[in-house]
Amino acid sequence: MDQRPIGVFDSGLGGLTAVHSLWRILPEEDLIYFGDTARVPYGSRSREAILKYARQDVRFLRSFDLKAILIACGTVTTTSLAALQAENDLPMVGVVEPTCRRAVLMTQNKRVGLIATAASVRSGAYEAALRRLDPEVTVFSRACPLFVPLVEEGWLDHEVTRLTAQEYLKPVLAENVDTLVLGCTHYPLIKPLLQDVVGPEVRLVDSAITVAEQAARTLTEMGIANDGRSLPTYCYTVTDIPLRFQTIGERFLGRSIQQLEMVKLG
Ligand code: DGL
Image 1 (cartoon, rainbow, N blue to C red):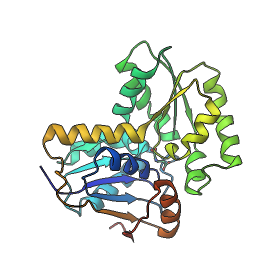
Image 2 (image 1 turned 45 degrees about the vertical axis):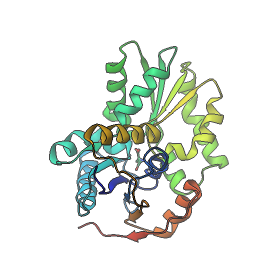
Image 3 (image 1 turned 135 degrees about the vertical axis):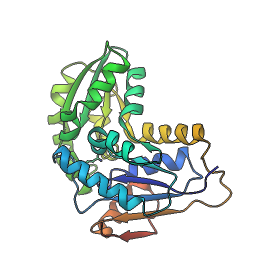
Image 4 (image 1 turned 30 degrees about the horizontal axis):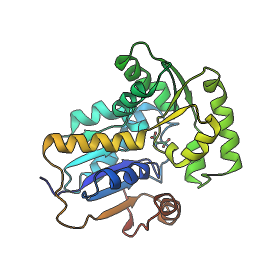
């Protein structure tokens, strides 16, 4: 048992989808959230820039005494997970592996769509994991760079977001996929809209749920889950405009974000 908090981070609001799942799956854990709202989006940047940002994010989070870090960001996972794990002596959970494991279990026709940021699609990390887990799976990937700014704008159920989704998903749906991986943690914020666009036949794989489940498995295996003797605490840190983060975050989480601080990365 370890009562220290779990650090959770993303480029912005997206990682709150993982927080939402963590509340359900690991309700006893204290969480420290970091959203790099000053530099979102990460997904349109180079691998080098993302790795540099991710290292700074992790360094900041490690100024707290944490027992584990959940990388609630597809873009950081696809580009930087291996480096971050090699450089840090605490468990770090990323979104790709657990999400792909779920996708290969879910697909019946072995045709899987993947939507993610440009950096994630370019990295090929999701495709490689899906094919390694099931060599018979064919993957149809599409980068959706406009989704992250639309989510950060709070346009979660907006006509512009719907039209954008229809446009992005047209070629993927034309491939007759039966499963669609939401490879960016911002996308579950628009899950109802995406489900509407793809129709009831296509099953969505939510990376925020799978990463939270993986975190639970890791804590249990390592014997460092919390026993829930005290009420959990949640602290949120961002690098810019906390008010907007709060408004949209609370709308999504359905709970108030009380302890929110704006921080500067060293
Ligand atoms: N939520 C992120 C992801 O999972 C990052 C999106 C971005 O900053 O571009 O990829």
